[in-house]
Length: 459
Image (tube, rainbow, N blue to C red; front, side, top):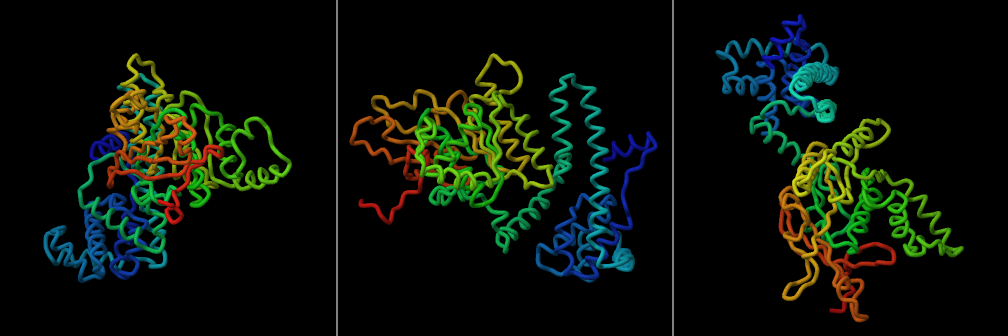
């Protein structure tokens, strides 16, 4: 911020801040420790422009995390121990002034908003300066626009990516996350259920900011499985889902979902062989599906930047909830937006950017991927896929937090005795836990997977 201050001073521009609002927020926390929880929900350490005030807030936050009330005595003791002031008397005098300068405790959240607004304006000024500097160093307009849009979006989401953070910041955020995850609204902060119980048990649900790669040979059912998860999330959890399909049209995707939900075979929907009684099922299912918060995009050769821009537009709409899950079908059809003779390198860039996107937007991304032909059944080898079968790039395995493989014996065994309903979801990589195999049931006529019902199995 020092360079920015100097640059702005040279232009006759002062950094905006409100010393009165900073002191009022701190004073309210000292006068009424019960308000600290509400203040911490709205205020971050970096909102304070005056370093001394920022350090005092950090000590109050530390006391809160330790379940110690932040009254005058405890805060005085904390700031003295942290050596924020030169001596004890100076600390007591300043903290007394803070308590005396609070105009109204009932308005503390309004003071907090002033702090945030001033901070965002300072960050916007900083970002504007950074964008100008980048335009002088690069002539790639697309990259400059993406960088500028990303910086502005980060500000809109309240994220500051400009500086290193001390580990104590991570500790505070972790404590706050754990507290929320164990509280009455824990569903909002825990992972997102896939709708498949045994898979959720293995993964601990879909982790926010995780890149989940779902891979299989063509025709194994990976698109159907991804759509099953997407509709489960949208219908049961009411979480908005964005589906980017580079292979199938939006209408084809919808008919897959309709087949699964209406109980009408995909074959009948494709051929139009629909009985009179089935129209009632279609009508009922259509009404239900239309209420699902699912957004479809069938743009070919879409890039990660395109996806981010489209998701941001939805997230910025005050009438819609933010996208909570992204499905990409599939990686090998994506583009970087630039010509490249090296497809492996291009795929590496795509998967790396998908992971960055998941982290930036704090959403799980399920990215489908093809497997190489080495995954086909061959002499001396089990036909179940392995991580080495991921097509085009080892970076898919490297960048993914979770790698799932779909496998069906009947895909290879064409005999009448083959069990057409048996399927497996192989958790080949799980950054957060164990790997393993999840048994599933497959209903190809209706393009849907089910949990295996162990209570009614004969074996």
